[in-house]
Length: 384
Image (cartoon, rainbow, N blue to C red; front, side):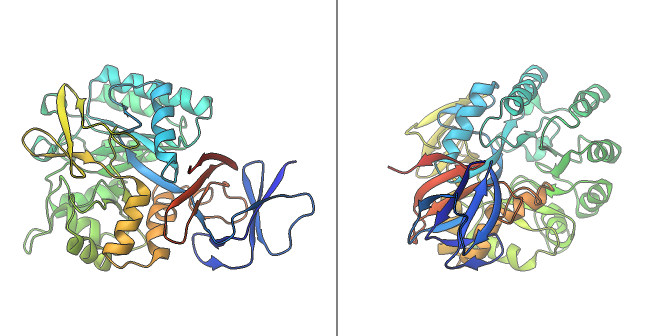
């Protein structure tokens, strides 16, 4: 058995900080945070660095020049995962934006192959659409948005058990509570998003089994003083988790702070990037469903100015929430690791560095710059 000990770092285990301990792991699994090292452990010196749980991103449309919609293959998934590993993401859900049934089927087949071949960082899939609301379509192609049929539901239910996590974003306008109940019973993480529905309806969908809200504030009915909307339901419904894009464009920092103070638990707000193919590249534009997406000043937009995904990585999201909002580093890190793991029910394996957890972690400088990314005990990226 090969055993490794990362020494010298200040370690955040997802709950607390540890000084003068080493992270000991073998066969891709954490053994312990130990002061006394096993004699047979290979030592890796990380003196002066921060060692934190690997980041988990539940909404990643692309990266490394690849969009999942354009390349729904195992190679496309591999390139997306590798691009985000450069920025500390050790587990992610490649996300398919509303597309045709044929592209959806190809994506699911590619995801199954990615799991079978153990693509580093691949956790499962996020199907964002096509069963959304045209009224809150955002950058989704309205020509492809449609109600969920019995055939659609049966095809999805056939995926039961195929992935560690399978997330689907739906709108109450095009998916029934009965369909949500069946999806949840089959192990899907059902998320409300791109929906203009009411507060009461959103609460009823949570009762039916919806567990999350997709990119809080964006593409949903807002919080009003007489109509609390989906935003109000997300903040006041204890069971609901909510993803949040922290790039300074999708949500105003003041609104983020208000939401963090208002959210009722145990469901929590966690970070997502909603990243597109630009991450890890110098691309200035790309195509989605035949429409050009423009990249400028940290924003991605359609020609009419509609935001079209985000141009941010997870480490930059953590910096934003910590430095711009003054959130403690501990909590900012939890929003990128422990809380998304809890959102998909995988906190017993991911999101922290306790014994028996996956040895997936990031080594950072005290200034939060990248040093290296480790997935399942293997170093997959080292900053030059």
